[in-house]
Length: 364
Image (cartoon, rainbow, N blue to C red):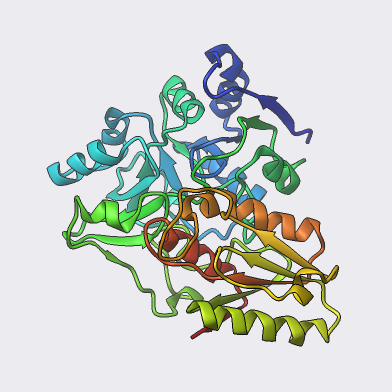
């Protein structure tokens, strides 16, 4: 299969330019398209044929449910059994945007979309091209991230092409995604509020609307064969480059000491090492900085809008995280030592992704 790429300006495009994608989805084909979070691989949520093609192209486990994307609340009403008033107000507050909400699904949504669960995860993206595509089709789109399963999520069209060329017919290239991590997924339909996956809407923002909301703790169930995930990101390890990731979490002094000790340990093994540097105040010895076999990877450090407690820019880190993890493999780095950050705001989502990508986590 030849994979075609069409490039569209998100602020200046016509519906005619989307027609090829529209025609493909109407024929039960699948298309990669941009959202504000990451690129999605989408097909009609009503088509079992299209959804099977998504699973096949990604190599995605069949028990990993998909998120359904809509363009308005009328479309939501057509795919869920009930929208309680409090959840409707939640939708009106955070949609369009990077928030996914679990609902009791209607019979219109095939079981293959939800991995046999009676709930469906739904969101309304804010990206102009994603919204226009769904609105013009007048059908909801089932769309996980447009990458091979276990790989870092794609935030640029070239990431999609590198993973899925020859497996899908079309990629809509609209530049880089501005959030950089996937949507926050919450469950409120059972009378309590829980974040199943941290993402583009922060815990702090949600607490302003849902004061009692908590973050889900799966207590190692992600590795149990009989555990049924309610949403993507609960069961399987992913976001991982080919390189080994060691995540270090702790104070400034702890980070400095562990980075140095890990560097010398693995340099003796003649590994090409990368250090993913996120804090302005962490001091790296010149011996490490000048080592040609050690690559310093600076992420989120160049902007003046910073977290004064940690001297980081978490939004910039989120935006560049998956691109950086992919670049690690392009540089053929064997091992990456990553500095953990505060879980404030979008830092919670960043640390969630890093912990899932890491083969080893060292805490103070």
